[in-house]
Length: 369
Ligand code: PNS
Image 1 (cartoon, rainbow, N blue to C red):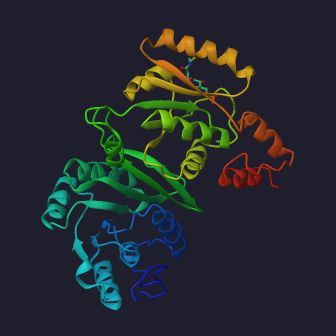
Image 2 (cartoon, rainbow, N blue to C red):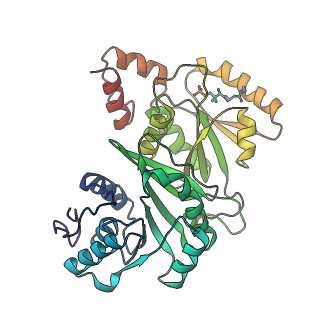
Image 3 (tube, rainbow, N blue to C red):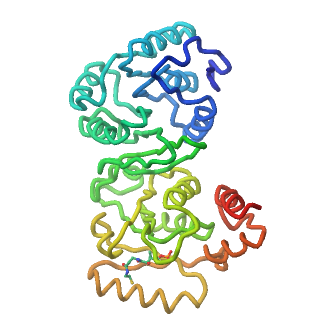
């Protein structure tokens, strides 16, 4: 096990795998590290490394510019390993390791973390034993509610690719990455309507103005560059967009919901103004209301879309008075649809430029091309 990049890049860590820890592999750490570095998430970060194992994630963060790391572990042998790694790298007081049973009592864990007085956490890694994933949501929720996290905190939850992380209401998924059997779900604080919680929004909003929001719902099977363009244009009109993936569609989807969410997260690049959610069943207007949003965003491509969209907009207005549909005209991608993309992919067509790169790759895999 070694540090991948930054000032300790290439250095080997003496303590790697101890009996009961399942360390994040170098490969996942490398890919996640690049994704986080691209968001400047390490710069002067105050990092909380939950279920730290060997401490490699926290040490990687320190190497890449984090200011302070708190590594939490309950296994004494793993804790000794963290200390050995800290000594080897000579990071000294920049990393504090503590012994704590995180899942037993989130409240007690928060109290102990608060006593450390290291400042609010800006980056939180959570890599619990896979079987304990359901117990993680209350812990992360407690960290937010107990004011231990900065406003723009980013959570990285590592889990098996076969499961999905059910976020607490205080957090929203803003990205996800899949590295073979391992997935990482990125989460940011949920924006409560009217709170203007996102600091980047507060900067751009006149005092007192509530952030505007829209729901952009669809099957996204798969997301295309046309969808991405509508989301980007939508962010000119709205402070925040919830991309809602319809899970229960009449059409038999080519991609699973997890794959669709992963591809959207990858395409949007973790823009904190975009929330990716699943919309399981029921009416779209009810879903929008449940998110306290009053605008449904739709893209309009060619004239052919118009009649169906006019019907849907008016049906939604009837079903959900007070909820309006706003259309954005497609431009460069007016001829691109998920259906045509799948057809072209099945027949070996070149999709470059019409879909995000991950989608292109996954379509090639699906159709064995
Ligand atoms: O990507 P799509 O297939 O164009 O998305 C269609 C979607 C999800 C917007 C539409 O099927 C929908 O709103 N479904 C939810 C059920 C509902 O509210 N039906 C009444 C609306 S007319």
